[in-house]
Length: 121
Image (cartoon, rainbow, N blue to C red; front, side):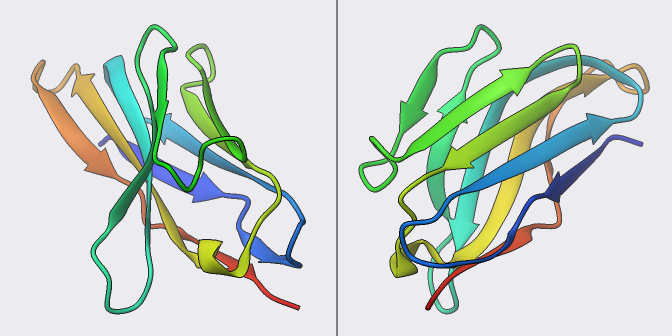
């Protein structure tokens, strides 16, 4: 079974930094696009950042200049470095990845369980 497991969330003061990690495991053949989403109570899940298999990145407006998405293909891990955090960044952050496995040989989208990020004094 393919799984995505997030880590690195926690409580941080405004202006602080956190680094989120998401490790993929299982019978993985190829990991294609990887993404970070976030969701706050009563809101739609929001796409924060995307990194392609080749390392190209895209950010939403709120993340530009503050967040950096990266990946280590050997470790099957995607990261989100978050700097200059603001209270409005508070959310559950979810890892998302398009993965083909040796079980099905068909690309499917997988989600992690989420990690809580709280920015507060």
